[in-house]
Length: 276
Image (spheres, rainbow, N blue to C red):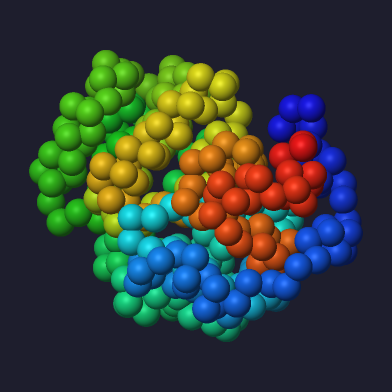
């Protein structure tokens, strides 16, 4: 059974059934802190958030240590992307708190979180500008820099690292393959050298060879550059294999938490999300 079939089956499963299946006690904040290890780089406490008057997250908490990685999995509509959007400032926060490296950021706007707290957000596929060149797309990631020359220097560093983008720097982004577009989206988010990277569905719509490439890049950013990474991933098996930590969301609440390896071996998680 492939991951698409599994995700379709999970999507058709009522949230109440999923919550009953994941019947163990919900993790406490103390358990999340112990699991993360060390002082948290990103801490979310009792977050209630959503859009307009609609509440999506109901008292959600999170801990990720500096240089750590966390993968959020769960059925469609569980609130996974809303967690990223709330941290970044794109969802309405009704109550609760968010801190980054000890700094309260709950009510900061997205551009303030990027500039002041070093938090960047990689949207789901389709966020590049197809009629702009690769270089112009990349420079968009440096729009908060004080001087254009700073953005140009940051772009050059990225081109030196990624020859595939450098070769197409003057071409329209519409000519890029799916994997190259994802590389461009991630690279654009790195222009401001963020400490925290929020990544929404990095593998969506990609061929397997490009999926591996994207996760190799994320692993490099975490292990070699010390980035703290929080991602939502439809391919739960791939996401849990990559991440230090895994959280399972059900109906806007945290149902399970563990290391990525532990959740990857868990029978309930396997049955519901991994096709095991």
